[in-house]
Length: 416
Image (tube, rainbow, N blue to C red; front, top):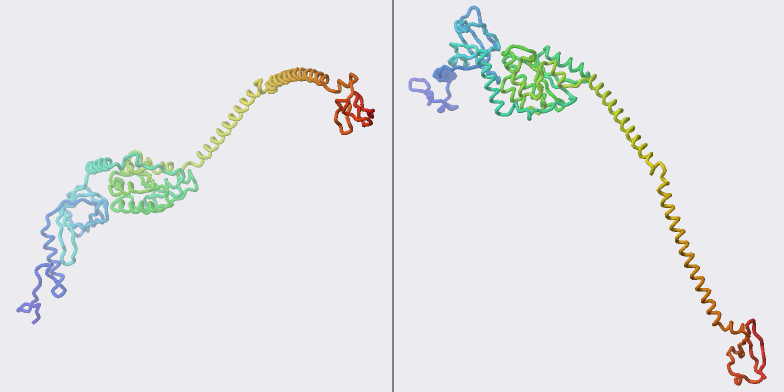
């Protein structure tokens, strides 16, 4: 007998999961039974979601469907009787938003968890509108609708990201009208589900993929018109927060003028229709060329007017006396200079005349005092041979040679 077996030959199993080990495990049936017992203790619950994969077999009294979360890719299997389904009063279709009253059950043999529903209620339009209005107030209070956080669209984007339905009219409207306005525009198109349970997940994934592309300068989320339920994905909080967090400007082009999902308030630009979005993202080449022609014409006229104005101003300046006869100013100054020169000459001549008179007077005085003037009167100067002047006749020896200077020349003489 083994240590793990009872005296009766049966193995003793741990009572709690905490007591299990590799040597003392639980068999699958015990774990499945305990899980079923645990789930069975859970109370019934009201849960909201979207209906997907609705299956109703004619020969069965049970209806099978999958209830999916409206924001993320979580789902649970639900079973209900045909009586519960018929009590709704309207046909239940995939994508419908419902509230289900169900009790969780665990199927031991398959190890699967499901909800057993005893009541299903469609979420009415009024309730959806009330929820959208509540979300609008909530996001508005956070500042997601603030115009100051909205970014301007580029004048001419390198690449336009487009999130739209598969082979949809919205895609055709945006692409064709944009290329009609600017033929060279490039698109990065992501085709996704734009309604139903997978719309939010796929649109958000496409938005984030395009936002991560450095070549994409603007993103357009486009879809044609529809009912409130059809456009419900574009008022989803997860999608709205993803748009608010995007670094690339986002254009909302959902439905028609009367359709106002909350995406219009969060997006940087709201286009009334997908066709209108084309006019928002790219300029019209014809209009730009015409504007360029007008601008060049205005520039040409402006330059012509400026040149004409400058020419008129120059002509006015040239017509002024100072420029018409520029030598007039010089003539006056020339006359002043000539007068000054004449006066200077007169003053100098007068001074020279007075100086000349003084020189002549002094010359006469000097001449009158000069020994030569004395000689002119008949006197003579007697000098020895060595040049000494003879002032005393007794100082001269007989026979001594003397020089006699007269007014005009000199003579030699010998003393006796």
